[in-house]
Every structure is written in structure tokens, then in C-alpha cells.
Length: 383
Picture 1 (cartoon, rainbow, N blue to C red):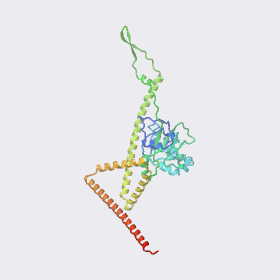
Picture 2: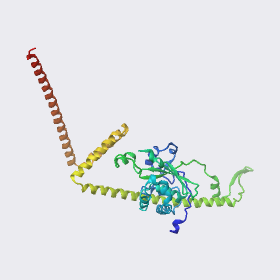
Picture 3: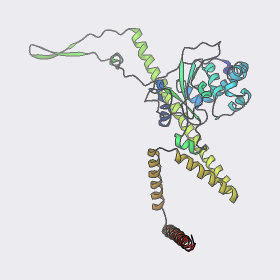
């Protein structure tokens, strides 16, 4: 507990480095729906294991000794310690802080507004929250804000966090009744600027005395060029560079391990979710099954009605690819069954069209007979 009370030494590194970071393609699409002044930033891929807010903070921290679990515990301690402060500031927007604290206590649980505010104090830095304008309401304007630490904490840094989703918008809506809501955080970093290499670092590693070739009496000889002793400060900077490179390599390895661990946990969680859905469907009654199918049809119909022409064509193309793949993997028996079903559907359609034509023809005949009878009646009636 004493360790948790020790303030973190946080220094934000907010420049995207392609040697370390990977851009989140899905989050990049959501970023285009956010404020225009952040479109130049690059969303960085972090594990979608529920600790994404803390991963986003760690990726700009460059400190492999701090973990997401430690940041979560520190956030819990901060929320409990200054509960009154956060309740007065954000209860009208984020709801009950007691319920929020109970949620934070569960590891791998998605974070919300309270956690962002408390994390500012834990890190001692400002956090700019960027929320894409998707299904956006006026009461959500607080999500696009710069949150600052508690008044007793001073800060010199600022990081930017994007409310995102693990899936693209179309898929996210499909599993949530055509409603989009975020379930992921990613950090936004500035693009790196090109810089010239430092030739002095190359020279300091070359201990061989430079030589110059010249001619004396038409005979080539080597003239030694004196090499002056480098200053101690220069050697010290080179040592620092070596140490920094070594530390960076360790940090990169740790981040890669954490990333792989997060990916594995995500795949396990998705597989468990699929198994739960499969088990729930297997235990459904016929009535529940029909209700679920009807609800699914309504969602599909609503989603298709809101599709653009381009999305419509993409969906049809994907459907054709799935059908083609499914047919390619069919056995001979399944192929014959499919052809028989297709023949039955065609025959049923022909019968239906024939009945409709007969019905229309009968209606025309009845109308014609009625018209003749009315004319005969008018003729036979004396004036």
C-alpha cells in the first residue's frame, strides 16, 4: 500500500514511432468523425482486454516497471480517497460514483469518465478526451474535454485519448441493435518529424586514427592526421545513448509481450462469448427461437435501410463471396440437396405467379361480365 501512495514519475512521450507503435486502422476511421483539429494525430493500437485506458497511458510512459494492474489499483485508491471531489464534479454526468468504483475494482473492465478523471491525478498530467461524433447527443459534450488533475497536483504534460471501438461501425451496430457506443480507448500521438542523423555519434565509435593519402617525390605515402581527445561530456552523452537504446529495447520487448498477452486474452474472451451464445441458442424454445429470428430480421432490415449505395454494394459482394465459398466446400450430397431446394423454390414461384395471373384474369372477366349486365339492365329499363 505504501508503494501505491508513492507518486509516479510520469513523463509523456507523445510522438508516434513506427519502430515501436502500430497504427490502429479501425480507430483511424473513428478519428475521422472527431474534431478536425485531431485528424492529424495517429491512433496507436493497444490490447482490447478491458485495460485499454491504462494501456493507452503506459504506451506513452516508457516505463516497463509499471503495469496496467498498478494503474488500475492507483485509480481505485484515488477515487476512494477523493470520492467527494469526483462526485461533486461529475456525478451529474457519470452517475453514481459508488457503482463506478465497484466496476473499477474488477480487472479487465472497460473504463468510463470517472477513471479518466482519476487517472489524471494518478499520472499528474492532463488527459484530453476525444469522442467521435457518432450518435452524438448534446449531453455528451463533456466527453470532448481536457481533464485535469485534482487541484493539489501540478502537471507539465498532456496526453490525448480517443473513445473508440474494437470493431468497425457497421459491425458494432449489428451487435447492438443498430446503436453505436464505444468499448475501447486508444492513445493519439503526433506524427514523427524527420531528423538528421548525428554524425558525432558515428565518429566517437571510430577509434582508428584518420589517415590521408598524398604524394611525396611521386611516391604515395600515408600522413597521420592527429586526432584530438574528445571531451568527457561527449563520451558521457554517448554512454547515455547506449543506455537509452538498451532501455528502449527492454521496453519494446515488454510492450510486445503485453500486447501478445492482451491479444490472447481477447481471443479467449471472444471464444467464451461465442460459446455462451451457442449454449443459449441451444436451450431456446421454438417460440424464443422464432422471436430471436424476427428481431434479427428487423435489425437487418433497419440496418440495410440506413446503408449507403456503396455499403449496399459491399454487402452484396461479401454475400456473394460467402455463398461461393460455402458452395465450394459442399459435399456431393449437399450439392444435390441445394439443387433440389432451388428447384422447389423455382417451382413454387412459378405456381405462385400462375395463380396470381389466373386471379387477375378472373377479376378482369368478372368486371367485364358486371359491365355487360349493367349495360343490359340500362337498355331493358324503360325510360
